Image (cartoon, rainbow, N blue to C red):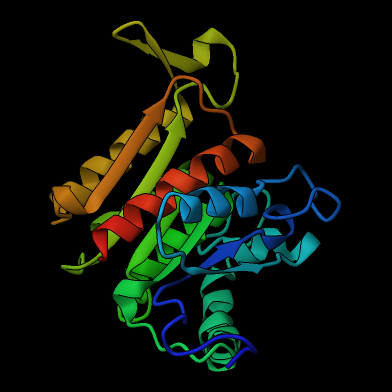
Length: 241
């Protein structure tokens, strides 16, 4: 148990965040900092009992392989399940033994953005006995059609909690690559995001267990995801009181 901690102060929840280089320090980031520590401090100031947040760095040039369960055409990848097995067999037991916490699935989450969000989703679908919460920022469903098929081919566990966020115009593509719906621009990323929600619900996802949000100001960038991270973690904390 870490010095200064007692059984009364040990966190009861833990969340593993992918692309750990980008979470806390701009110097280590490859594309911008989330400022996650500031978001967590604001939650604590608001009276919330914080989870332990563990950043898992990606492997640099190995990131594509690590974060994709299904290969991307012309790019490769597809070692995502092996990466999750490594987390479950090596990283998670070490971290939780060092900090003396033993969360059940409902109190252990995993989160990520872009391809990392896809891996977080695969984690809760493939290993519901280990992960009960998925935090998914701008999931890149476009990477393979099988990512959407995965949502229809897995049983949704009763306690699964999912928080998803997508900007309606993340790709900033030309107008022939977007749809207009009620005056809102939806690029093809956002259309896949809506389809993912529909598949989850059709496959038994409880409406009260899912937050699936679209934001017209949302961007595919670390600074935006960081600004939204406090709300996503707060929602999880409130669901698991």
